[in-house]
Image 1 (cartoon, protein in one colour):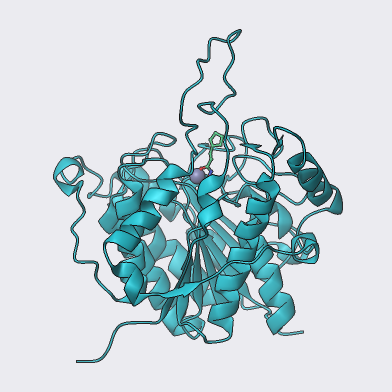
Image 2 (cartoon, rainbow, N blue to C red):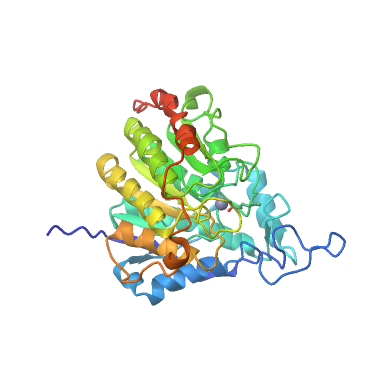
Length: 380
Ligand code: 3YP
Ligand code: ZN
């Protein structure tokens, strides 16, 4: 039988588990507003650490090529962010209590800017390993997340846009003309949309719950401008969809868009907050649904980008379920098995999401017309 395993790079840094999100739920705790302090911010790093520990404890990590993160440099960050944003984040990181990414719900403690730079640097390292052929593909379990960070500000728990930093690094270092970003975090990938709005050298696809966050962006009619017209593709999905909706969206819109674009590299900002147990959204994807999405992306990469694909962790807030979703994705992209079943399948398997509903089909079919505007931009 043919060997279907791959050399999959895997990246985690101990300090990713040290992000200090403060003792607030989402909004800062406040006696005045009646928000009682709580031990865990919804984005507390323990959820990601639990995923890392499952990958480790299950033995899957022994089948992966472990990669180490270095801090991204100022130059790396300034490829996609304003200098004022970088300087503000670094300066506030020196304050006794650290700073906030930009919207007041995204605190980072003293020195937290160093961890954000390690996350951006981890994205670069994973991408570099794939581009140089050191590994076939890679998964970087980054924290903090990046996909809400815009050119001039952080927001939504994101400080620097890890995926955009990696894409800009790859474009410059390897001369790439066509990089596709497929963001399956349940929230809109507004950061890359902002950064690459006028660019055709990045196809920015975001699959998300309609209006989950930010509530005023991610609509289907946001499609880029200038040279980038057509190269922003939003798939705002109706709440309640599960495995069936995501598979249909990927098979009929995301994959055809990639086929049309012929990317040289695919970057997947992957969150697990579309899961059926997530507190911050209302979708119903199970671990096997994320596995299917990963399979479709790896197969597309095998056909289109010489197998070059990098998965970068974004959100996911169920400390119970997120680790199992991530484990199945890493199993699928590496071709190795951890020998563990989805521990929550008995609880979640019967809850629905396996049947494509009419309104779900309609929401996806409405995007078909956008595919014609995506072409492989000519090399310049
Ligand atoms: C940011 C503030 C309220 C919702 C939250 C979303 C963070 C996230 O997972 N983005 O992908
Ligand atoms: Zn999210």
